[in-house]
Length: 102
Image 1: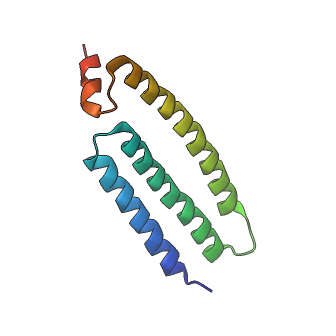
Image 2: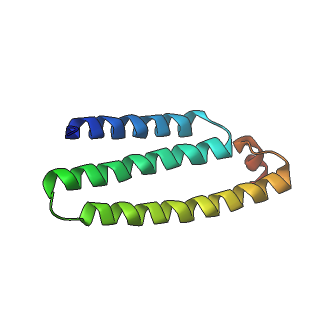
Image 3: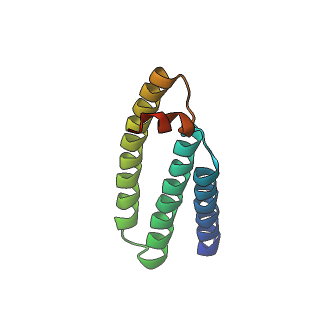
């Protein structure tokens, strides 16, 4: 059996990679992927902590499934916004969106 510390270490690694990618990237798709990495880290924490604290119950897994559903909806909306930005500005860089400011 894999110890809980390995899951938490993997989750922390995913979280920090996601935050670093979101802060350093200027491409909208790369930023969306970074946000998804952060959400996957949260999902992994839900499942691991649930298994550690309440091994017979399933609340953490239900939270994880709900979070995956919210992530899918968020990704669909974000991709639709990115497509509209690309159609308007012919670029997927964050700097091109600054032109939308008044």
